[in-house]
Length: 372
Image (cartoon, rainbow, N blue to C red; front, side, top):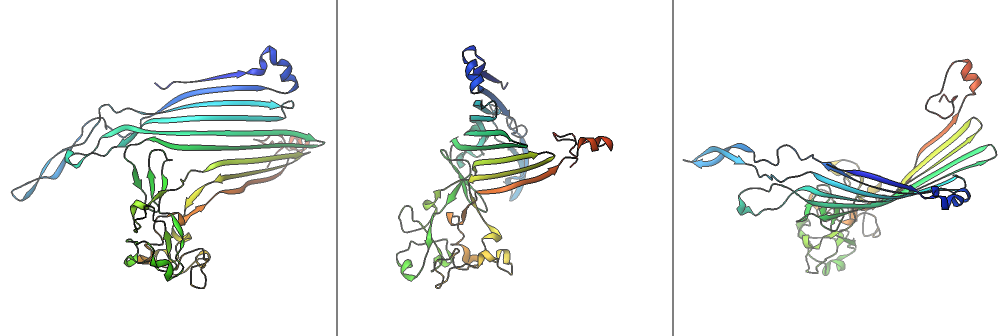
């Protein structure tokens, strides 16, 4: 059972605020709460299942079949997402200006995870309801309608933000292929995880006191290679020097639309974007001769050389020589915020007298004569 309810109070309908409503505008408070269950856990994970292993036991120098029993959890339950939302709606200047603000807090508990078990157990982990994630965010919407002579304007915009955090997970998990991410309590899900870069080595003097890099090609770095921060200052760049830096979640997602009508003409444009986002780039866009290609792209040309010390990219390396420069690090993480014009439309609505005469009718538009 997953209950939900909502409440609303139009404050300006109260007798003591009627004068305020007539002079200023409407004001409404909202609150809602609800739960949603997720049963997408696969079949029969709450039962011990038996499977035949053809090589279970060795006997007389021959592998013999036997039975394997899967780990199970008879107390397994659904994931539950509980979300509370607080909202405010207000209108001013005889409903010309509308403002709406929402704040939400969503907690997902009982997330399905496999916990670590000691090897001496002789069996793997059963699925557990052991994870918890929290999302908090807000959204602001503003709209304005106005008329100047024969022109009618309608402007609306919105911006929202969401913060994600792992509340409970157990032993952290490091994953990834094109880049490394970590699931760790106190950080957003799939936070970027790797080395922090500190520019490029410029000359042999830079290499004299440089920390060792065991994963580099021949365990040697050269001028033009990416330099990494030795976090624990032990003289070696290894797994203990990795940082959590950023995450793939966009911040401050926004949109803006404008509509103008004049006589039978109308104009509409819609802008959309993200105010903050970091993203790893891999493959052709950053790696020259990726997968043994026989060409380089324009962005690959600004490579480090002794005559080009301020280059965007490290010295040109390919194959196994890429090990140092293309290690998982923030060197290949880019600012990917953007603003784009998503839609632009200019229209004309045919006069109603004409459309009635030829027996056509526009659909899906406010104007009955619109045929575009």
